[in-house]
Image (tube, rainbow, N blue to C red; front, side, top):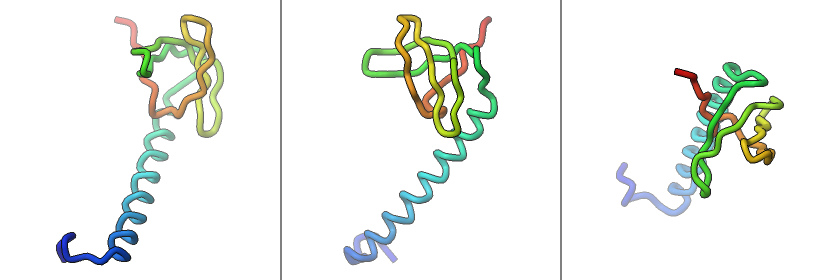
Length: 87
């Protein structure tokens, strides 16, 4: 069946299935990142202000609290964070 042939009801049902799958994949990704992250890790993340660097100060079940270089606290989903590796 082509998407152009679908009714509104069919499109809404398809949309719900796609959104559930996206939520599942994001949760799985967050769990994987969270398993690799430890308190004290240096991390970075992207905001409208640009790239922010900080240190993990707390891990929750679904979020991570980061203390940025400018002493602000950020509560973020793990999938937004990148562990900074020293070279």
